[in-house]
Amino acid sequence: MAILRGPVEPRPMGLMLTKRLARMVVGVLTFLLAVGIVLTRHDQAKGVLPFHRQHTGPDTYSFKSASRFSPVTFDNPEGMSRDDLCASFPRYLLNHVQPVLKIGHSENKERLDASFSSVSSCFNTDDLLVISDLDEVVHDHQTIDVLADLPADYYNLDNNPSFRNYIAQKEMRNNGTLNEETQAAIDGWILDKYKFLPMVERAWLAKPGKAFYFFYEADTYVFWDNVFRFLESFDPDTPIYMGSPSPGRHDPERDVKTWFANGGPGLVLSRGAIKALLHREIDTNGHYVDPHVTEKWQDLVAGECCGDSVLGWALWNITIQLQGYWPMFNPHPLHGIPFSDLYWCQPVMTLHKTTPKDMVDLWHWEFGQRQLHRPMLYSDVWRLRHPGEPSTLENWDNGDWDSWQPPAEASIRGSGTCEQYCRRQDDCLQWNWRGGDEKKCILMRSVRYGAARKPEYLLDDGQRVTMPEYELDKQAQGKWVEYRSGWVEDRIKSWRNERKCEQVRWVGPSVSRVF
Image (tube, rainbow, N blue to C red; front, side, top):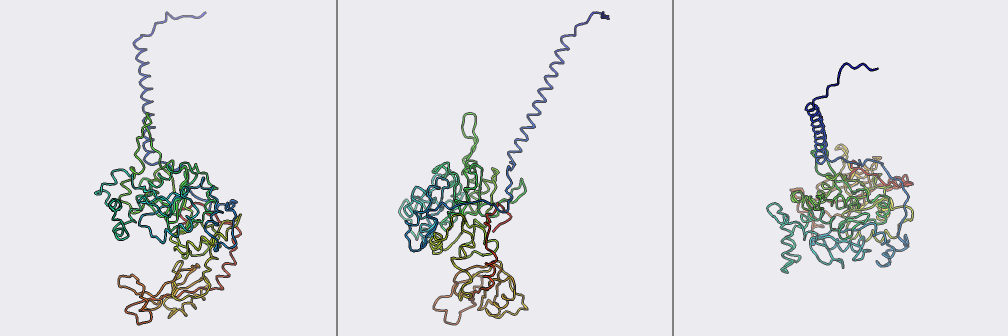
């Protein structure tokens, strides 16, 4: 039997309520503290968003690819019509890759003609989006003036003085005074920076849901076969931004240098990247609370030189980093490719600033060179111009890429001693003699075709001006320079024979491997 010491006294009700209330207060305070910590961390995260993917490596990709052109190649493409060549173009792939050509009203006519006679020639009016700063018809394509509906603040010339070029161009267009002479007063280059963000948005609105959007310019040469092969190996719903890396703005919060894709060699945005760029937060009613993308970055556009830099910074701020694929996206023109181990077994997707004649020549030549299971490599492109054959050219400049100069004690007096010195150096593949008053010998480790260059006057401010034809056979009227270029043919032949490109080098993403 339990022995009770006495009757159990009931606890005072007031004391029980006080303790229960205290526990509730402590619980609420603990909850509020936890919420505060989470919200604080969230606010910090919004300031410095984490990167979910680091674009490093692999050095190269290895995957099989096939050309979708049918037939893959022609025996005599130079003698065929544009329609016959374009009949082989796989236009059904334009459901996957959307081409977007960015031009301006002041665009060089020769350059435009060359683009629409080569890399843009197989697109009908519904295939290709042509973005510009004026609505007009160019080679049967209706251009889209993407500056026409920018937010009102762009028209505030106190904050955005460069935009006066667009306003003046539109006024002259409307009153009928816009012509080649009056167009000279318009700075078309500075207008270009305003096009990039609205170009991306318009491409999405006009052709929504495509897997990839390929943006290029009038002097961009695009190897479409290689582009199609490469993009087929990527997931379009992953945010992907690719091109040739150029140094961008410094990010003070992460203390890192950023990179953007140079617009000249072309750039690519995936469906996932564009959706992320155009995304805007909403309230509980579905009303947008974030500004429009062109409004969000208008102050940056006003103060920045270049729109491709602004686009890169806008993408960086939503944690989409550039995937650099140089040298496949190449800032060099055809005549300026410095063939070396960096430009040999890698596929070539684009070139920049290629001359109009080279654009058309390369386009026809490409139709006779494609292979079903092997992409076009730089080593293939070498065959078009055969730099180094012949071994010397007068009034020709093969450049100074990968170059060095002989020491003073070498006593180089002319093109002959310049060539001899090059031949004595095991790694010298070509040389360039700048005679006249300059007397400079340039030696190079890569093979570059170059271009014709007539004698020039050397001005006091460092500029060079081509000598008039009527003065070429007379005594020069000032300091001048003439150009002679040469190549070590046997050494170049041996160099090429040692590099058979048995493995295709689709390079991996990098912003340390840059132009």
